[in-house]
Image 1: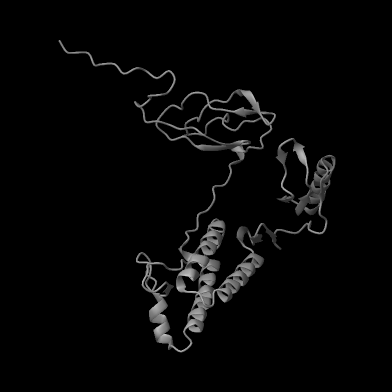
Image 2 (image 1 turned 30 degrees about the vertical axis):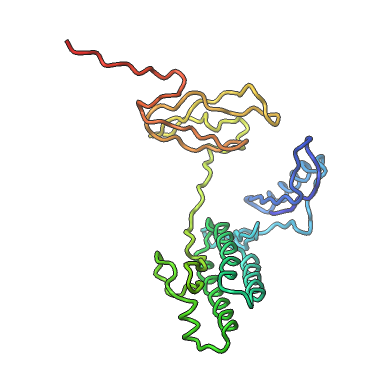
Length: 291
């Protein structure tokens, strides 16, 4: 089930909720999805919010759904998150419009306009299954760039256009069809040059939504070092106590990153023997002289 919650209000002075709030709820059955939707509607009603029924739907995961530019769908027994077809179509239309608007400009203007779009879009979708889509977008962009080059030099042959604008511009890439500005080192980057980096899944025992607040207080698994101890902070921010670390972790194993409600707590470790600046650290003593 996905939905859009619209509302402009302040829960408390100085704190505003975003106008359209998008959410996704994954359930085991259609009946459970209906129950969850009813419970959420009851929770939103006292706050002056309601579901936008025109954008709220209950679908099976095998059919898939689009969410924030991604398509979430289960293929047989594997769940894949890809850039949605609508997002790819919007990007293609934008690239085509930009290239039409850049007719009459030089190659440096083309590079300055396209590179931020390419880098930003690729960085947003680098955590999804995007390798094939990146390759298809590179091919589409190459056709747009060649069309722009041919329009700018309509009286020149194809070989002259290729030699002038395309070549191995990036010395770290074995690609001889990179568009660049003649006489400069500037070139248009490719989508496929962005490495795919999978996001780290949140472990069930370290959820920031744990009502008991046991984020760092969970017992350490076998072969791991405890990160630290939790206690209620004396200061209250946003009406809730913040868990903080007390004392440095022992051992040389680096601390793990644990998420909590109000941000991320990272326990910084120092190599054994370098405890300067830490409370209760032993003073440096001179070795005893031999007799």
